Amino acid sequence: MALINCPECGNQVSDKATACPKCAFPLKTNNSVRIALADPRLVASQNNYLTFSRLKMEIYDNDSNELLWSGKLSDEVASFKVEKPTYIRTVVNGHTEIYRNLSDCLVEGGKIYKRCNRRKNLFSTPEIYLEEIDGIY
Image (cartoon, rainbow, N blue to C red; front, side):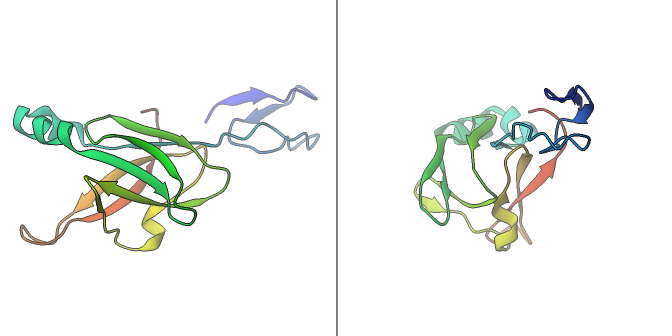
C-alpha cells in the first residue's frame, strides 16, 4: 500500500481508498485487473514452454460474454479493465476451463491475481482458481 496526496485537501491517503477520509473528495478508482497466467517454474523448462506458447487463451465477462483479453497462455500477465466486480470465464484453445466454484473467478479492479490449478490426482481434471496476491506482476 502506498500513500498519495488528496488533490483537494493535501491529506495523505491510501492509494486503495476511493475517497479522502478527511474531506470526502472522490479519488480516481483503478479499474485495471492483472492476472499472472503461468507459473514461471512450469514455463522454465523448454518442453513446457513449447506447449504453453501454443495455447491461446481468452478471458470473457461471464455475464455479458464480452471479450476482456486475448493472448497466449505463455504471456506473463493478462491485463484488462472492469467497471465493477465481475465473474470471468477463461477459454484455452476453445475449451472453457472449469473453476472450483463461482467465487474462484470473481475479479475486481485494482487487484492482482494469480491463475492457479490443482489436481486431485494425475488423471483428474485440473481445478482452476484465482488467488489474490500482493505485489507487482
